[in-house]
Image 1 (cartoon, helix red, strand yellow):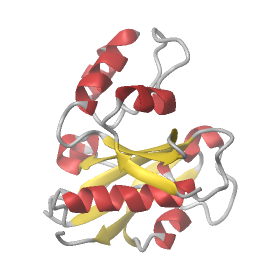
Image 2 (cartoon, rainbow, N blue to C red; image 1 turned 30 degrees about the vertical axis):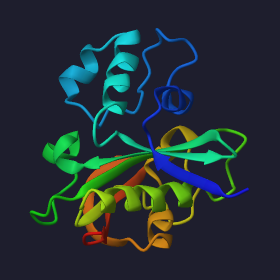
Image 3 (tube, rainbow, N blue to C red; image 1 turned 90 degrees about the horizontal axis):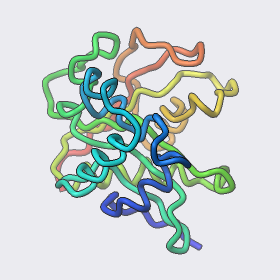
Length: 192
């Protein structure tokens, strides 16, 4: 069955991918880079899910979802960089003044990994950004040179994943994750 990638407009499907098993648990909900740090740290328990529910209802929604036969199996967070903490991040540089979009989280559900869903999610994130007129999309993956990345840290993607999608390295960063340097990968996409 073909993987279909669509905008993340259904809260229940987003919750299935990034929400906790217990609604009151303090987990990321993919908000760490999406909202200001102080707000992120202040949210407790169900407040995170309520904020995500609001974001899912906005235009544009906070990302894209991959479906396999109607079942949500993957998530990619993608939004204008100006609306994320990357806008002021001192470790990840700005290449120029373009209003780029950022992809900062790619997650595939256990049991569905190894089927190319990450590749479909990244392509879907680019298409989504393009549909909103983004001139370019950036990602900040680890440059792991093929070494294994801990699954809890693999959400940023790898340089190879982004290269396979046509991205090129635009800059080094001062950010390190799981012992690997992160690089700024970029794809110029123009307008629809």
